[in-house]
Image (cartoon, rainbow, N blue to C red; front, side, top):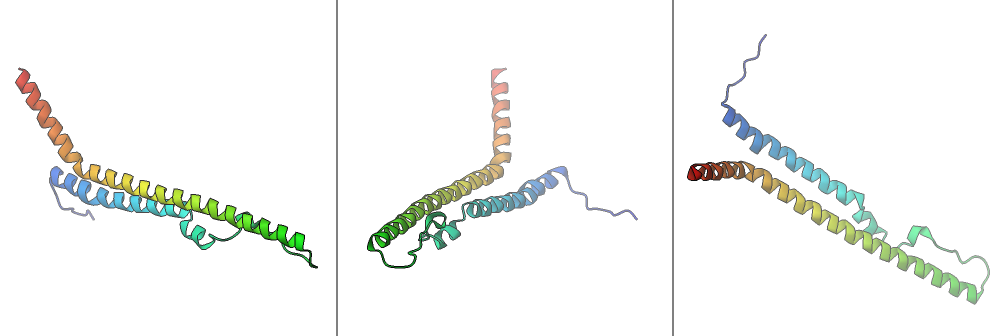
Length: 135
């Protein structure tokens, strides 16, 4: 059996494609990129482990009591945590800047996609006007 579809003019079909179908796809892809950049830099995970030692470099105190060894281990573990905090802070900042960049690029592309018909029609109008004025 042949399915009869509703007939629309090509202009109405193009408008519905341009402003409904593709606009939804752009918003979905933009959301995917935002989610990807946030997960790529693991911002929440870095915040959860902010005070952890870098790459779990940590020395245990061992058995017995030696004040010199205890001081060395405390200094080493403290520096390991400070290095971990510094590296995580840099990655969190880079991740936030990447997220802001993706948001601005997505907004720019969305804005540009909405304005494309007006830019093209304005360019055609101005070029026809320029051609007619030079004749």
